[in-house]
Length: 427
Image (cartoon, rainbow, N blue to C red; front, side, top):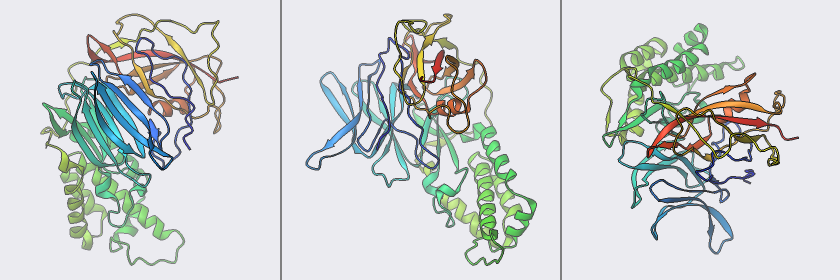
């Protein structure tokens, strides 16, 4: 059952009226989507006049429902997704260097699908499919460095699922892949984000002790015939094996082959080295990188010469009206935006999806009556950063990582913007 309390597209002349917030998906679940199992919807019209609908489609003759997406303009329409169990809007109205603002949809056809399809549509009339990417569990378009370049962060999930008998959900860090369009070509730019891969490597190494590494190196590497009488020893060996693979994958996918293979030599049983080396190469060769048009030549990412400007988002009102009673919700309430006008965006951001756990669960107290947060929303419509007036709230911080917006626009282009939101617990 879809537990969304309310979802709707916002009028572009309003920034953020009061929104109902809903629980986040639990660990191991896919993130909440615009439409799932025939429940939930989103509709908005792009700056180019193409209307986007994502929502319920009734299955004729069966009384059941699933999800569909339709793009329409000037009496014409394109059925982007005729049916799907889960259909999500990752981004709308963003610039991927494809010559037009785009819509990016994440699609799962059935509830058994562990992997999603990512479709990118041009919102320039006539709307059309520009690109499709498959083989990952999740995709997210984001301006990582606020430098005006939008990257698509994803995983090479299908390639490593059941790798050496290890299911995908056993990996804390499945191989990360960072993609970006340049001159209409989809490039692997992962090597430009070494710092993120190094964080994964450090986290994986922190979970491995020298005793565990010595014990694993004394095995045959496959663990298929491992026998032990010590409780938990086989589990420990398996976790060690996964950690080593995560380290090797992180080096390999960030363009550092020498470090990857050296780590494999250092940690893996010598007699099994050639087999596992070949298996890793084969998995990567059949994975998501087969779909790219090339790899960025630089093994390091130069700092951008300058950050893009961050605009202020302007709404019709500057503070909640004392005569208006905000809608009560199961979670928290979001009040209107308070604006400090410097560079004002022509069009404020439009919420695609916002969701949050009930504040006060899991040991955290309720919000103060008026808690103010400061958000930077990037030009891909994702929350780049959040600051609190007062003590930080980890539940809110975690939730904002999944918030999505149609980005603010200035002079016809998507831009990053800052805004302030007032949050409060219902009484």
